[in-house]
Image 1: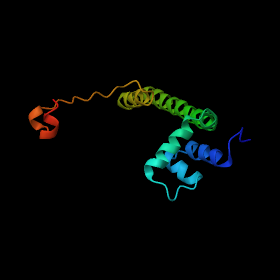
Image 2: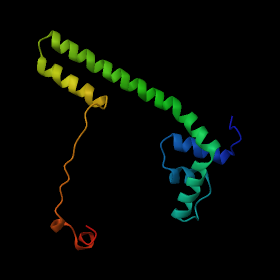
Image 3: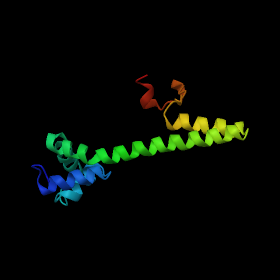
Image 4: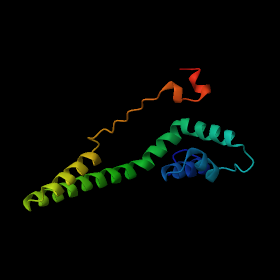
Length: 130
């Protein structure tokens, strides 16, 4: 079942797949009580570079990713049904809102941010590099 992983590596994979950060997964899986944060981070990164560990994490995440995808598909279909119902009832404002929500959920809208910064507004330490 562990496909060549130690029990601690297997637990690390499960912790990562459940959404924990690499460092938190390492702490939960290994005896890291006396380790510095930098050491924990380094060891967790080394584990993530291990092909068997990375492969197991990918296998564990796959069903979760598929479930999330199906949830997005259902969400888009529900919004489509709401839009169609609103059009049939001549509620065009609601129909437009539902269609915009569908577009946002599908990632069709890009939020543009205008970041104009005057160098006179920057702190002196940053101003030297501009």
